[in-house]
Structure formats: C-alpha cells, structure tokens
Length: 120
Length: 110
Image (cartoon, rainbow over all chains, first blue to last red; front, side, top):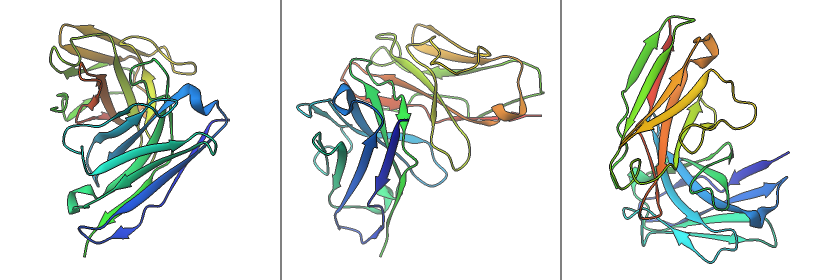
C-alpha cells in the first residue's frame, strides 16, 4: 500500500525557516517524481515544487523561487522542503504528492498534509 | 503563472449531469494533453480523477469523464450522487515545466 506521511509542520514566526519532510513507502521511490502542493485555509491548491526521481532536477513556480528548496534522500525514501523567509501568506497545509516519472504532473498519490502557520 | 479559471460553484439534483470548465492559455491547457482533475472532500487530501485530459485511473467511476478543446478543458459528471459533493480542481502541466491549478469548483448535489 502506498503511503506518504508528511511531518514538520508547526507555528513559525515571520521571517523564520522551516523544513518539512515526507516519508514514502509502498512503491519504488526513485520511479516517482515528487511534489509539494499547499492549500491556504479555505483556499485552493497551489503547486509549490517538484523534483525528479533521482533528484537531479528541481522545479518551482516563479513566485517561490529562491525561498523554497526541495530535496530528496532516496536512501531513506524521504522528500524534504526547506522554506526560508516565511511570510503570513505561506500559512497552509502542505501536501506531498507522487507522480510517476514521465507523466508530466499527474499526481497519483497524496499524503494527508502537515499544517504550517506563520504568525507572531 | 496565473491560475486556471474554473467556475466557483455548480449545483444540480441527484441523478443529473454537470460539466465543469477549466480555462487556461496556450502555455498550459492548450499546449499539450497534460490536464488533470482532482476531487477533494472537506478535510481530506485531493484524489486524482482524470489524467491526460480524458483517462481515468483504476477505481474511478465511469461517471467521470474529461475532454478538451483548445485552451479549455472540461470535467463531466453524470448521474450525480450524494458522494460527488466535493471541490473539484483542474491542473495542467505548463510549457515552462511547472504545474498550475485552477481555483476549484464546489459541486453541490441538491
């Protein structure tokens, strides 16, 4: 059974940093690109980042380039998202999602999300 | 990259059919057939309903179907059931190798 379990979400002050993790199991991790998608309270989905199966290529929307960094540890089947200079508008539930390599953004599997609150 | 445009809400009676539109540009919806639809119930993670415009993953009811014309994709749901009440999001891969979502459409089953 495929499982994605996010962790690391918490309350953080504006300007602070935070790293989220996603532990994957039940599938061949390197065969999947991995993504982060967030959802602000009462709002829609927003794609945050993507990383190829072997971690050699990363993708970000222009709005987040430079503040967020995605990485993966294939030896531990773990995906990470390091977030810097956090702002109130980064408050959201952050989901990790798996995409079969080559499927151009098809998000087959999702975790249940971890909440991040940016507030003083 | 602007979000794809979806109607905020659609409602219909049980048993009826609805169609949700998703309008983008020639840089996303219109550039290739990498259009996806997701269903999200309150407090839950999204679930993939349709991939590559009109394909259903295993386990998804045939009542859900997708199509595309130019820069606009559509999701149709036939024979509406109570459990179809949810928010539906379209998504597209873009020419810049990013992903973009629509704002979501809340479906109410009367």
